[in-house]
Length: 160
Image 1 (tube, rainbow, N blue to C red):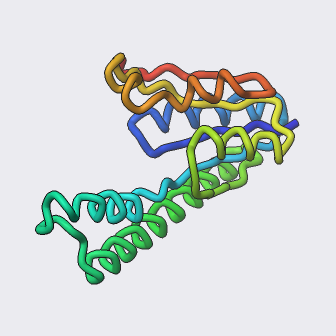
Image 2: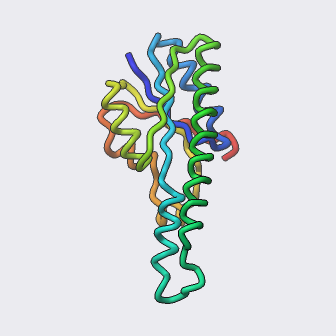
């Protein structure tokens, strides 16, 4: 049996991981710890360049593109190390955990990896964002629930 837990390094990540690890140990299931990285730095440079006709002063220069790439690479490295530490700590505490770091749309990647790993359950955290956030940005957990071909467990935010 395989379980997939998606983490985003928010305040709720600890609660989500605790729930996932407990479930993994009780079910003697492999736990895939997934973090999805978006392409935010590249998107930011692209979006900024779209204003060139309206505000030439905000157009990214070639150096800005390289800076964005460097920042993105450092962030990716930091997140990768954090993910490896999480899976290592889970293994030390008795869970059969394996880290997965992928790039793309969060909901799509969660669904794709859950299917690839033949997971029986996807475990996600609830952010408790308001209606405005949901209306503007959508909800990863909502998209996963709607399209998952397996069970989905939403761990509530303890601060909410």
